[in-house]
Length: 103
Image (cartoon, rainbow, N blue to C red; front, side, top):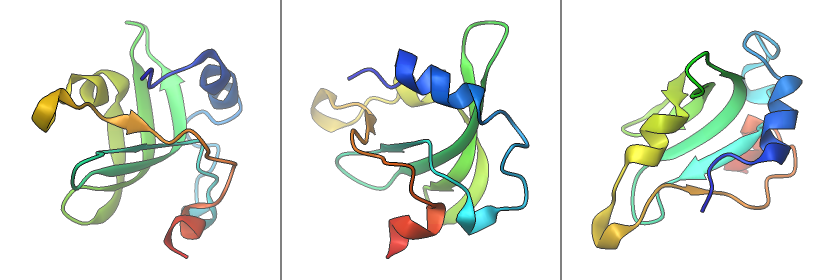
């Protein structure tokens, strides 16, 4: 599965770093990435393409506990899980808020 699509690239043009500053749980989730066989969820709210072609994202992430932080697309793509599985992209994110993911 592709973690970045042309459609997502267009969405991120509207949500560069700082565009949702201060919104916290009311920030719009642009894309959700997740570990299909264990802990690991990334609710990405902002992102920018870097000079090297990689993407740097900011969002609400859960590995050991929920916290705001940064992750790169290449980091997500490099994760290899049991049985050869990889990090996946939620196909049906419809512009909900961070808080909506917990209700």
